[in-house]
Image 1: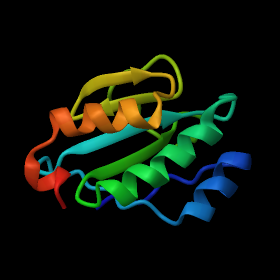
Image 2 (image 1 turned 60 degrees about the horizontal axis):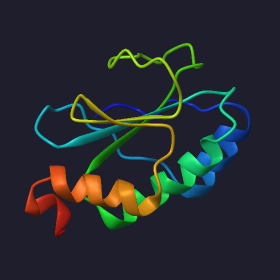
Image 3 (image 1 turned 30 degrees about the vertical axis):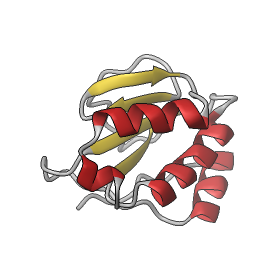
Image 4 (image 1 turned 90 degrees about the vertical axis):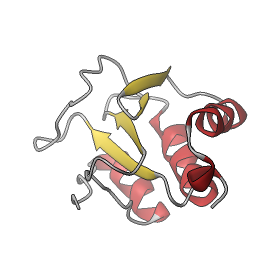
Length: 116
């Protein structure tokens, strides 16, 4: 297990309202990494989407990564925020609509993760 990166400023306040995210790096669970930054004007919407994804897909590991935090690692070499990366593959640059994101997740995840 990894610890949730501390989000600074307005991102940190919004993330704390949603509760802590469960992070996993075991290589077995499907993982959605969502990259954000302090300069991101649309990342409040990103945090809202994170909460909805966590409720709809409880067996999906979600990592919220603040690229401006000193301890953050850009393991997917993203170049803009927000960026959504599912199992190492970028599925969205910028915030997708809730419906579009859910369709992408259902299409790419196994039934065990989707039907949980």
